Amino acid sequence: METFVMKGVDKAEWGTGDRYGNVTDWTQVENLQPDSITRTKNNGTLAGFTPEDKDAPLFTIYTPAETPGTIAIGLAEQSPVNMQKLFNTVWDAATSTIVVLAKEKVANLAIRLTSRPVNGRRSIITYYYIDALTGYSNNIAKGVNEALAITGTIKPYLYLGQEAIYTQQWVNEDGSLINSTPATVSAGANSTTSTSTKALTGTATAAGGKTIIQQYWTQVSGPNTATMTAPTALSNTVGGLVTGVYVFKLTVVDSAGVETSATTQVTATVS
Image 1 (tube, rainbow, N blue to C red):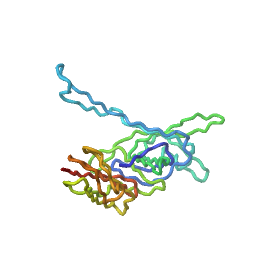
Image 2 (image 1 turned 45 degrees about the vertical axis):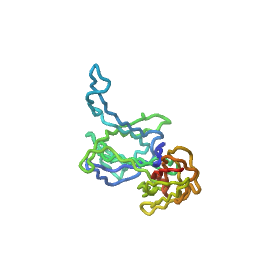
Image 3 (image 1 turned 30 degrees about the vertical axis):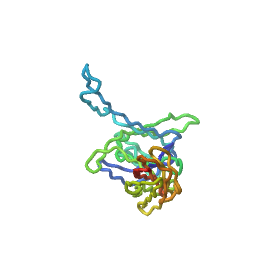
Image 4 (image 1 turned 90 degrees about the horizontal axis):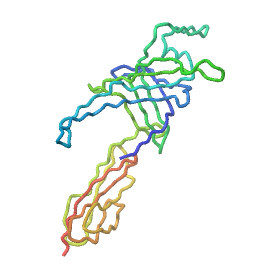
């Protein structure tokens, strides 16, 4: 299994979302306030009812979080595009004037955050349905940028008939997709031997057009430590066996870095 790490936001995008997970007009958010993106996920609670003379709960009650998660973003640029997305406005292009109407606008936004690369991987987190209200994060003061402050309540959207909150996708640093489908691996059928050596033959087929870039055998268990003639090949021979049951594991790594393993059992009866 691959290891993914997320550390910081490199790009933010927004669009118009709805409760069915549909998004239109994705555009990149320009001129973010440094370190201005925050999100919270409020957790539910588990409460167990345990009788006085027992150690284990008789039943457990799950209580969902009463307060939904939130997301906050600060925008340094007060462009007409940004203002029209977030406020109830009238834009007069001829005079570069925005009229902000008194009626507040609750924008149904979709937000997509792309992380900075770590170990050649990026994370893309997408919220499809956010009720966003807008204000200002800084006062008008000398030497300070007045920024738009977007504070949104994360709402569930429908995914295959179920309520969902967000998606998190891992991609390569250049944005290309990662196929995490594991390879098909076999370490061979369980077998027996009456000698101190045994040939092991494994097979491996990568998924989705990927290739196998590495394979290796390891011993999982046994009455002693066996020797291996070709531990990094699919066909391997183990030696130095004594009477007992051995388990050997074949692990392969594909071109996307996905590891897959299979085991085989060898029962030795060496006189």
